[in-house]
Image (cartoon, rainbow, N blue to C red; front, top):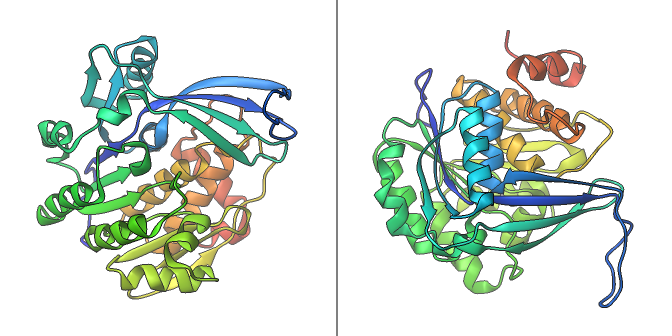
Length: 327
């Protein structure tokens, strides 16, 4: 994988929306019935939003290409991104359109499920992205995230965008999220074409298993690598995370914490991993930083995105992470 120069920004292309999170829900209600949670919060989010917030708190210069509606939620997202220092020059406000919103329902153990209204994300097109392509010019890594929340951006169009970035010498990162259609063959075929343009693919285990049909994490990673991906990173929750490159492979365990909720945890792990990658660290060191970053995030109700000193401190206090942490 092409080395990244110190200080090079990351450019994120993807979905911005509002998350309304209701926690401690005992189970899903039947139609016509109601269940109660015990706390709720509203956040600026989307995979692109969570990744941008996580990267900025770790000190990585971050630019964003996305869209929001012309409403109070769009204003909230832009204000929050500005407060974190994210470059929003590539975020388009869509006149007369509503910002996407997701209801995240969180069980008592922290597991979650989602119900979404895409709003203006349905109008996030290849043309809109190309109008703002200048945002990628100085980036060492170009990330495409939340693909299933941007239905106008087909696999073919996404592949063209990533090919354009790779042709400019940039690392391309992909995290699609879960397919709401449960991975029909048409989707799997599109994924196989798209992955040929991906330097770094970062699915969770459920997604990797659905795409490959393999029964183990290691087998799934090898199958994904055979599709053309240079580095595969699979997130496995409590079990930890796994990376496969042409030169090496291996697991790094998760740091155990009391979980508030896991909404956005995968995106925050991605931020930690990309921080390590931007420093030129080995894959297991990147996994360790990703694990430590996510562990802090899922255990907090306020100030959820940790800075790099907090991440380093948590990793140093965890022996199986500390051994991978560069000085």
